[in-house]
Amino acid sequence: MRIRLLVSLLLFASVVVAVAQRISTIVTNPAADASTGMRISWAADSAGTGVMYRLAGVKGWRRSTYLPPELATRCTAFDSIFSRNARGEDVYEIPTLIKCGVTLRHLHPNTRYEYVIVDSHRRPLSQVYSFLTAGAMEWNCCIISDFHSYTPSRRRLQSAMTMIDTVQAYRPIDWVLHLGDVVAWGGSWSFWERLYQERQFRNFMWAGVQGNHDYMGREKGVGSNDFTRNATYYPANGFPEDERLTYHFRYGEVLFLMLNSMTNRTTANISKAKAWMRQVVRQARASQHPPRYVVVCQHFEWFNGRTGQSMDYSRWSETFDELGVDLALGGNNHIYARTDAVYQGLTTDGSNGTVYLQTSASDNERGRTTSTLRENKDLIKRRWTEGKNTIGALCMEVNAQRILLTLLDRYGTVVDTVSVKAKE
Image (cartoon, rainbow, N blue to C red):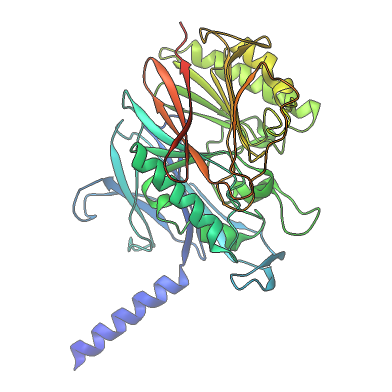
């Protein structure tokens, strides 16, 4: 009888611990060099949590490594934000959360690791998450954007996650790259919580950029960089005013430069971003292991996918020409559009110049239709949309000779391909 009572008390105590330290929004982000580092992000309801990690496939956690968070601060960014709950009812969200983050260092390249979030007694509070470090000579990732996850409607998120699985079935992927607008209202903490519950966040590293929807709240005029900043843990290597939103990282032979479209709306901030970009690219190319490719990612589009009108292409093309950017990725417009390599306003044979590409919507609700292509007819080589109900994503395959980008529709059918040649 005493043994049963003791067991009951222990079980009750473990439930109390789990309730007292509820963990949410766990996501794996890259460190500055994804070959040897990863950054783990999560939120806790109280202090005293950390990470235990190990090589994948090892049984038990006795030989794992424990790390306390290097960031653990009370987050108030989402307090009293007007939103909707899962039943579609109007609510004001007042979450109690501590934003946590930790960097895993000295990892082995091209190696899969597993981790769990634990309490102060190193008892697991989460499911097992995993990621693959960079380092393989050839690798693949999924590129997706604009799925506007909206908790009252399950369909948007389901469409996007199924599309990631479709890309995975086409070519096994190592990680996921998103180009923004992953939630409908970034100010709604419950939307981030629901998003990160998906299986695809447990198995892959995710890197991405902030979209305008990720920046905004439900009410007009409500917006903040702190929404995305507190739902992720990107590297703190951007320019000072935009840390952990503007950032860069290496994944193998590719240097990724991630821009914050919501900051780069003024001439002054664009100048800061360009100066930062020049410094990062020049330092990387002067290093002992210069990147083979330079890829720039942002949320806003390069061209209007309906008409061909120049959008951010006109703001950035001279700088990309100057720095030899190989590939520029954007989203936002909800219409897939891409060029071949372009240098000084002209299409090239690929030996120099930048391929500009923007993704379609992927939520099956917010796509757009095309119109007559009236501008940049000589540059824009392909457009695609399924109209309002559009679902699409890309597979990005990288090796020493080229980056191959393949657009797939919801059925896994190849819609378009473009190759980005490695430059001398």
